[in-house]
Length: 165
Image (cartoon, rainbow, N blue to C red; front, side):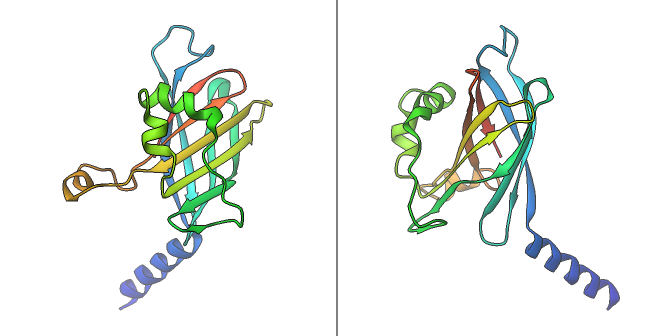
């Protein structure tokens, strides 16, 4: 009985406090790549009981980034009064990472989309956008990851990252 109560309490704490979901940033293009194979950096985002809350990452040269999502959409419900569409400035980054035409085909009009702009511990400005893939049927859902979130990031130094959670 005590074990069941302890497990139930732990579950409640996890649900109320949110979860931290690990992910990666892959440096795909830019001056920090310098002809090497793509570098991988760890990241995590915090998910609250009803929505995404924050993002933290350590990228090139150990620079730390941490902050909250500026906009989140989920179907007809928006987390803020004025919906913010994907930033056309990152259209090239989406197409560079995922293939020509990806931005128009998948990002514009997506039902789940989030964006943030963060300033790192060394002054670098990083813009990040993520989206959750829509699945057409059971087969594509079975091949998907648990949360199936993809994204891109671009810093003010010209580096482009693939973001995967």
